[in-house]
Length: 149
Image (cartoon, rainbow, N blue to C red; front, side, top):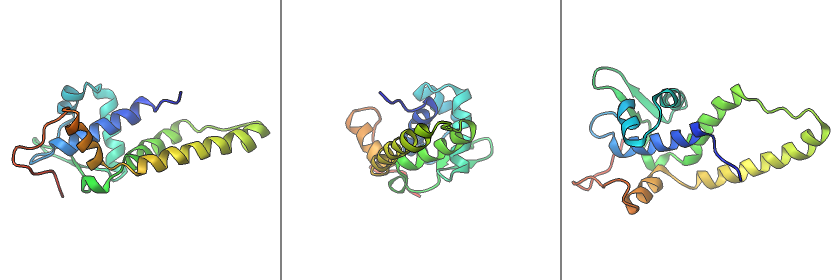
């Protein structure tokens, strides 16, 4: 079975955490680590990649941290995966050296990835937040508001 790399899974968890907790102040990495159990060494790398990819905004200062760069209904799981995947691709370029690899296996793998990304593009952070609330993983704000930019 295919598995997403830890960094991608951590990125999705962190972004959903921020979608819920970045009001009114930005969310600090140490808070995400505490709530989600994501190792800080992975989290800091992931957060910087997400800032550079336009998913998050970094806020400096003593009360700094991270916020979503756009409304959560305008960010898809596919957006998050693409940012982390692009960073990983630079580190792990998969090169097929045989003709079968280049002409058969490579195109098959590209098609499978395109199907997975199409599915992930259909799921927004808003959808993931709704799923988390439905499963009791997080609580809706007491005033009924949601983080919006």
